Structures are given as C-alpha cells and as structure tokens.
Length: 234
Image (cartoon, one colour):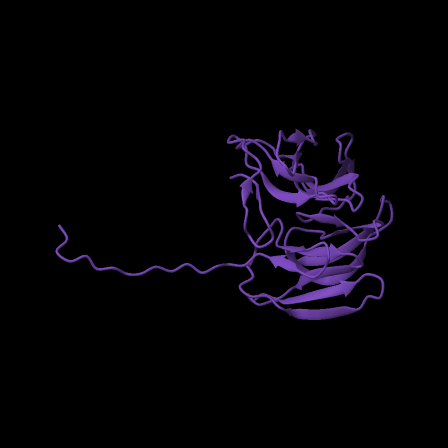
C-alpha cells in the first residue's frame, strides 16, 4: 500500500511513496500545495507522521514520540500539523511544527481519529470519541473548555471550508444527510443526501475542496459476478 497523487478527475496518477516495508496512509496536502503529510510505520510497529514533497523525493519523519501518531492535518498557515496520538489508554489530538520539533497535546479527555484547525485558525474541530459523536470546537492554543457545534456527526465525517463546516449528520442508513454549519452565524443547512455511505468506517470519511464547492466522500461500491456453467467438465 503506497500513496499516489493524480488530477482531480482521476487522470495522471503517479506513485509518491515507495517504501515497501511501511504502510503509509491518511495523506494531507499542505496549504501551498508543495508537501504532503501522511502517517506510516513498519508492519507491527507504531506509526508516525511524515512529510514528502508533492513532486516526489525522500520522506521526512516529523514525529518520533511514543504511541501511534496518525491522520495528519495542516494548519491554515502551514506552520503546524495536527494529528491523533494513540498511547494505548486513550487517543488525543496533538500538533507539531511542520518542520519537526516538540509536539504539544491539545485535547485531554479523548478524541476521534481526526482534528482540523478552524477556518480562522482560532480553534480545533474534533470529536470527543471514536465513532458517531458530537462535533466540538476547542479554543487554541488550549486551556478553555470546548463548546459543542453539532450534537451528533458520523465518525470522522466532517471538514472545514472557511467559516463553514461540512458534515454528515448521524443517520444509521446508507443515505445520511450532508449538512453545512456556519461557525459565525450558526446557520445549519442541508445540502442533500449521500449515496452508499459506509457504516462504522474510521479514519477520514469526508473532505472538502479548498474553494468549498466540492465534497469528496467514501462510498461502498457494490461487487457482483456472473454464474458460469462449464459443460463436460473433467
């Protein structure tokens, strides 16, 4: 399993990572489009956060602390990388300078797989547990209590786009509502319904394009086959 990049329409796909001993995942573009952060670790070994030039090259390890660090997401100015840090007893959201250095813990009472900096850079958007749960906003650099934004969001199915957060509302069906809430006005509107949205999926299930006009989401594609008869089989 390696990381590839391509055009938005799926063309011009090209391989970016080449380490056959590692399992890279959760790629995230830097705001300037020059770097990609990802998580990776040898099979059976704790994962860490890495970055690689979008044009290719040798990856650089960013985190080295204990635990499994995963699902990196950049700050809007490209100076920080947020990530989930699982140290066995609990998972929390941390951040580290994009060039590497001392990581700092942001949440203290647990989190889901992914955390995003808010569009204005003043808060951290995250879920308090793995799975369907509330969406919270923690003031940065921390210290204050988080406030609820949405009562229930599908697991890791939210992403900011400026002052707006697009999210998948809690709905047990495969066609859950897709909604958008403005963090300033608190207007919460329905955008439509998704098709074949997977139940119980972790890590990252939704992304929004930088211009806020396109939503990318995971979908279960059905598999089928033909029943064939072989005559005079021996």
